[in-house]
Length: 477
Image (tube, rainbow, N blue to C red; front, top):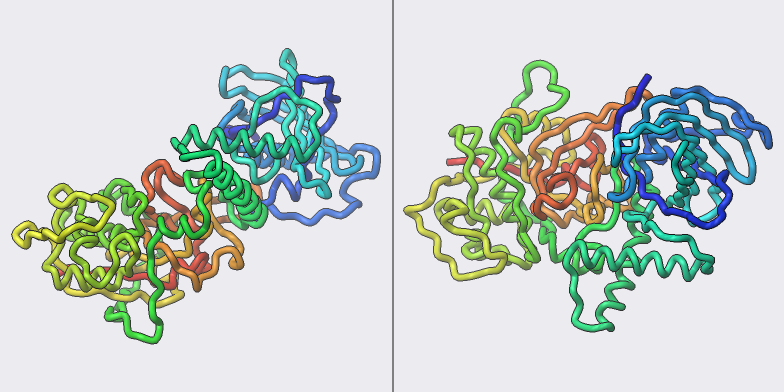
């Protein structure tokens, strides 16, 4: 069996006289995702001597190793064929895999020995050595939290000093990539401290991830949690008060649910927008819902104005947050929504200048979907259109891609702080492991550079991050 899934591998070049046999990452470490977790006893690997193991199993481990090292830079490799593989216990677990790899940068194929040395008691991460014919020996040290890896000559610094240098270098690259400029040295040092702390959070998310998501350095990597929350903006509902929405009457879906469904493919989802440094997620969630409903009803996909809600919704607080429930009521009271082109987004509250003669869509109210019922959400999505939801955005700050399934302790369903839009669902299949990862497709409002071209895939089926706690939809007039 041949596996052609490309993976990006971030590597350190060690040009000094390092021994070539240093490797790391055992099966548990390389396959940290829930669907590849395995328990391994000492009887599986002989102490001291090496033991061959199945080529397909080796191919799967090698692919997981490459995937775990995805870092946005460095050589890209495709696995062509695995010849042999062995393991032995030598101060950790040493795995050797003899395989053909294609260098994605040059399209050249090389016969390589990949050595993976797992030493779980060390915090530095995993040492991996690629020894390919007619190529320099390349070594990599992988820590789960690393987003970029630095190509540099290895010097004999102390571990702590090297770690500080590495973080500073990552921070410098972060500044360049996201155009960060600080007023003075003191502010830069403060942001560097925050950045360093956020790297620990990234490591914690990656270590405890139960899905396939990768977390790393994003544009929010120099922000405190308080500053980051300003980029969300969803208020907490007062559960003691009625929302004002009617309970949704969810029609039973006839037949079996399709395995996957995506309103983007049916021309019912507008391009990803960017709320900027304004806590207006609630407005984007509502307009996205109405855009979808309008497209399903009329066959026309139109962009409606979030700025109108910032300016004219007197119950919510514009960039200081709001609630989708209030926004639905405001649209009904105001008299509808103008197009985005007629009332463009400014990312700040201004004087309301709604023109009723330019109102193109009206709502008569909104409905609440059954709390905690993702099956009902699936039925509603299939029969009506995209759904506005509240979500705990804890894991989204450093999300880079994949199906996000963080531990509940890291993403409580009780702390909803971000309004987003569900536009579809699907399933990621892993036939080699006889596992699947069902997910929701979530449209965010942080621009197309964030996440998966502006989208977030979150695990479907156990109310991850409160995905089914606050699901609502407008009712068009």
